[in-house]
Amino acid sequence: MAVADYVANYKDVWEADEIFYQSVEEACKTIYIESLKDLPPDVRTALERAYENEELESGKEILATLIKTVSTADDKKLLICQDTGIPIYFVKVGNQVRLDGLRFEKAIKEGTKRATLEHPLRSSIVNTLSRKNHGTSTGNQVPVIHYEFVEGKEIEILIVPKGSGSENMSYLKMLTPAAGIDGIKKYVLECVFESGANPCPPTIVGIGIGGSADKCAALAKKAAAREVGSPNPDPEVRELEEELYTLINKMGIGAHGLGGSTTALAVHIESADTHMTLNPVAVNMMCWPARRMRATFRQQEYPEITY
Picture 1 (cartoon, rainbow, N blue to C red):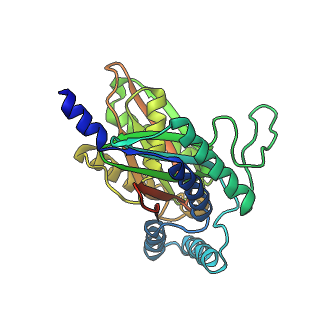
Picture 2: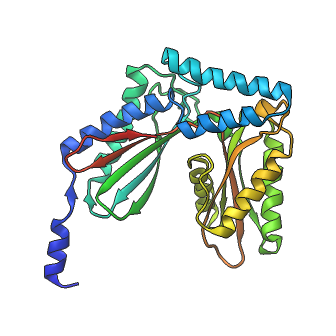
C-alpha cells in the first residue's frame, strides 16, 4: 500500500472519544436490564408456534404458562426469570473504528454493574472458590466478552444473560475423525437426553463443531445466541441443523421435561475447520427465555437498541 493510500484510509476512521465510552456504559446498563424483561419477537413466535403444534395436552398447558409468563412480564415490567444469569457479551468491531480496548471493557463492566445496583437486579456472580457474591454481576473475568472483527464503521454489543440451568448443561467432546458426522449426531442427542428438564426446555440447542477445544465451545455459545430458526449459510451445516432439530423433537422430552413434541425451539450450528486428527463437538443450550438485546453504535449517533 502506498503511503498516500495509507494516510487516506487512516483518515476515514472513527476515533472513539470519551463520549463514546460513556455511551457504551449507559447502553450496557440499558440492554442488560431490558434483555431480562423483554423477550425477542422470534422467541415469542417460536413459543406460540410450539403451542399451536403441541398435541400432548399437558405439554400444551405448560407452553401456555410460559407464554403467559412473558405476557405478565410485559404488563408489569417484571423480569421474565429470577436468574439474571452470567452476563455474556458478543462484540463486533468494525475495521474502521479505533478505540481503547481497556477503556471499552471498563465501560461494559461499569454498565453491567450499574444495571445491577440501580435497577436493582439479583447478582449471581461469586468468587469460584470462596463463593462470596460480589453483588454487582461482575467480577474476575466477568462479564464474559467475545470479540469479532468485521468490515465497516460500527460497533455492535450483544448481551446474552445466560442462566445457570442451561449453562450447566454444557458439553464438549473431542471425537475421533473416524466418528464422522454420525458420531457428532449421536453425541448431540446423548447430551440433550442427559440434560432432560435441567435447561428449562424447550431450548435452543447451540452446537459447535471443529476448531480447537476452546474454539469449539465458543462456537456452541455463539450458535445458541442466534435468532431462533436462523439457518446456517452453509448448505451442509444447515442440513445437519434440520436433521438434528427433527430428531431432538422426536425424543419426547417436551416443555419442562414433562413430555411433548417440542423439546427444542431451534438447533443452531457454528463450525470451523480443524486439525486432521481432531473432530471436536460442543453443545451449549439456551433455556426457553432465550434473552438477548443489542446496542449498535455509529459515529455521532445515539446507539440503536434492538434485539
